[in-house]
Image 1 (cartoon, chains in turn blue, orange):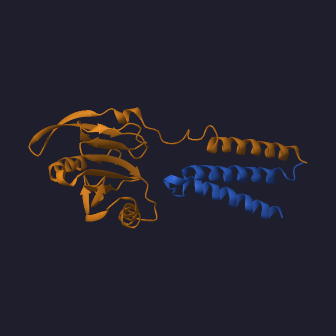
Image 2 (image 1 turned 135 degrees about the horizontal axis):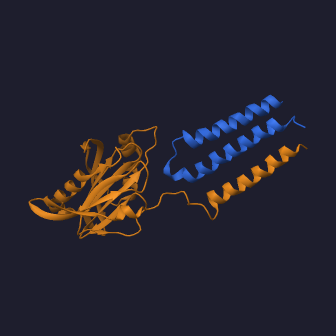
Image 3 (image 1 turned 135 degrees about the vertical axis):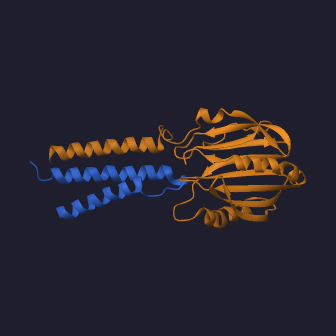
Length: 57
Length: 202
């Protein structure tokens, strides 16, 4: 279960970085790209941190 | 629940709220391109056009990083205020001139973009659109694609030369329009303007 969660976290983070740095954004979609890419990066990092802290008491 | 997880959760909510404010709230637009005051300070230059001495203004556009360019326009043409970043709009007697930056997607070529997206849009939006000519050319070693067409504005026939100049990031569109009856006289000016175009960071 935890491995699946870790995989999804990495996938979300990776997709966020892809949208931020590699996706060719049309001029009309710069604002939405900014929001979605940073949203995915923040959620991805948060998920990874939760994953790391999950078993630590 | 683990204290660290609660902290991460709260920080995430705060970060997302800040992101929302920055993207769509009062701070939105902070990161968007703005007109650089340096772009609006031209340098005068005397040129010879059709055996006449004409004073031009050389504009160095520094609005969008990676897309700095130089172009000159006759000093008698009036620069219109509030042009978007990366562009200039001019008006003169019985005509107009404009330059702007456009972003063609990476999955197409500029030529395909012009023929499959720009020209159909012109056909739809420009009254009496009638293509006269289309050609590929080179402007100061930059690939360029030029559409020449007629249109009708307030019952008068106009002729427009629209030139798309490829760049490393964006492309530039130079649009020069004049009354059909005056086009032959003004054409040397149009040629001089187009020949002056240069990317500054190439």
